[in-house]
Image (cartoon, rainbow, N blue to C red):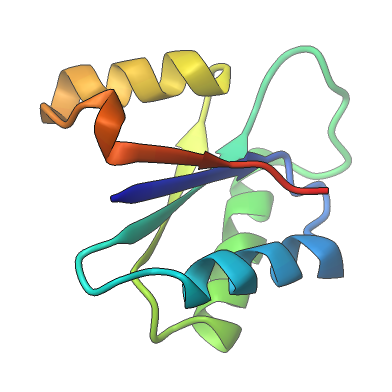
Length: 102
């Protein structure tokens, strides 16, 4: 199962970290948490996408390194991003669980 949690993480907050921890603890052996760091034209970001990707990766490395977590740059809306991922990898929508915070 691929659990997907996306956000702008501008900046990453304690609430984001708590959500990542909660999802991570539910992962089974072959599960993966995919964290989409969103970048879209509809928002004026405080920090560049590469900095936000690095911030999220640093938190994962520091606090969640024992879990299977993949940080990805998300350039489109979640549904489109997942559709594209499915087309590229051959997984199906049944392989995804979309996680929503707050």
